[in-house]
Length: 295
Image 1 (cartoon, rainbow, N blue to C red):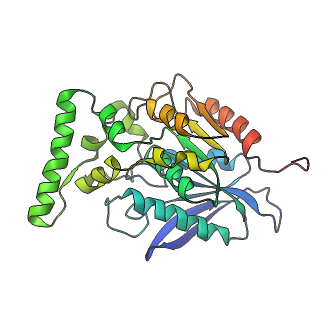
Image 2 (cartoon, rainbow, N blue to C red):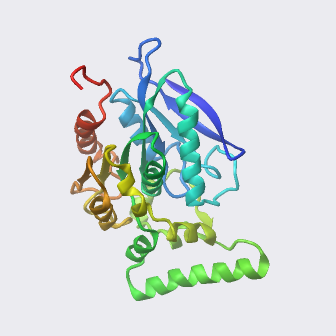
Image 3 (cartoon, rainbow, N blue to C red):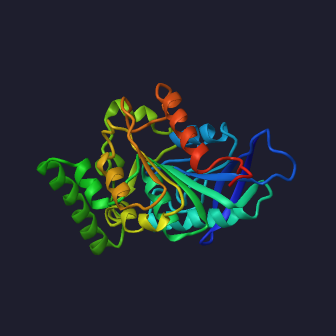
């Protein structure tokens, strides 16, 4: 069962969809995951919608949402700021805590790529978040961008875009817009995994916000709450080392999974069965739907 919801975040109305398992009993409050989409993405017709349905199939309530400025949510289109997205996530926790289907003590957050970085940071600064799953996420914006623009020529082009954007804003007071692929390169053959509702231009200020964003700084604060860092070994978009470094800085109950044979999109049709089996086993141990009497 899917329910359309809206909630407020810093005066903006944001859109979300709540998946409620058909097996839910009247009055039952279930553990719930908030699912966060990637870079200027959307909750609909996207990789995070597949992740949401995968988790819902395991018996959890799931809330997939559009960040401000994305999808069906209010806000300036494409003007993504990392700390705004953290605020949106925390406001979603507040909203969900009041729903009859949701156990407010067992709200987890998960995300893909950019959404994974936001999920980690949000949990690091908000103790209400009980569990985190990161799919192909990142912890240090500058180092991530260096990995995504690895040659001296590519790095010079990328940093030149940032500098030109700063100068344009200082001289005109307006944002300079660039292709999303100049910020985060994606091979053409993998772009089929992007939502048709995703945005394809962003202001340079979005890239600057990402450059300065460091989930690594707060990841240790998540412990002892469970944290899964799931990163594909052959990720050609977000460097795998980002999740390794996050794991090195994380505390108790953090687990790193690096499955092979996958791209940046671990729940694509080919890879979903493998991914779901790994995730289900981890959830059964660290964040089960039902808490046993023995615990």
